Length: 129
Image 1 (tube, helix red, strand yellow):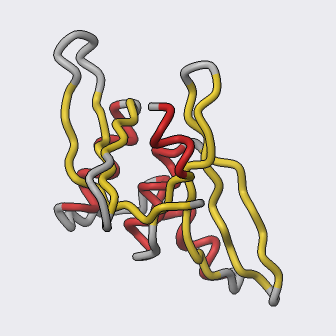
Image 2: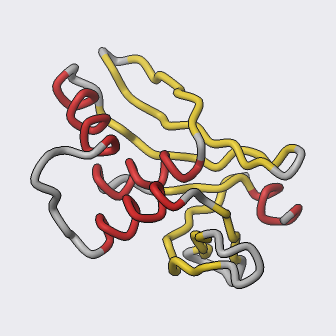
Image 3: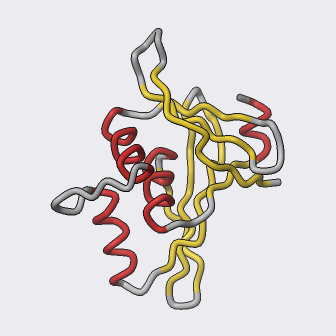
């Protein structure tokens, strides 16, 4: 089963000084922390705050390429946690076919914010973490 989540916040891990994205269940109390890189955290924060760079950044470029090629990002899904690494997919509808693109969760989340699509996590990822 998959659960829809929203970004609850961005934090910094005081031990490692690494950014963390907190995902919270829409219809529950489950929270999933995902450690991300500083660039991805900055990209996510910029989109949350609706700050527009003078030139497209990487996640803006990805959105533009998908849209210009006629694709529609339907949703992103954090699919698993394996050996302390999270995995995700970006679901794109293109020419009537669903295309799944392997992604780091941080990149998928940054893209989801830019295209305003829902973010999901598989229930077992929430339970395991």
